[in-house]
Length: 215
Image (tube, rainbow, N blue to C red; front, side):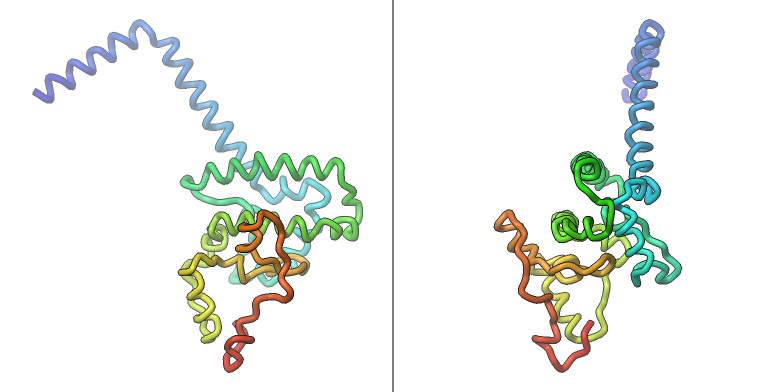
């Protein structure tokens, strides 16, 4: 019975294709071309070479190469490793990031003066907060792409990581790791209030657990 049905369906498909092969071929070719443009374009726009083609991005890239994150364990991360979600399941987030943030930064690159590092620093706090909130909203998935199930050795770090079960995420505590330091921000309050909330001082778990080493 099943074989008979499959034979009927295959015969119907063959008859349809014999008559309509041109539009089917055009449609399949168009779909393939669209997939190549979308996936290939996303990959091309995620390269460090493309990111640093804007003059302003040469400043944070220089900071990245001088940070502990660069060269550790033989790895040389690029811009996308922190700022673009990876994986097919997160592809929509990557595209949205390119469309929204890319258009925003291109506009600012044209209309803002980033000719010197001092000019760039005038907006650094705002840009850092924008990047932090992206990572916060992604539940730090770009961090977790490399740091899979980290297990801090100091007791203060172990206790701090219990906050992960309470809605906290990597970026809540781990700020200013790569680029020039700016003020710490309370990301939970920033999300709640819809504006940047600067903290009086960075989160330091040794204040709470002074008997432990800083993690």
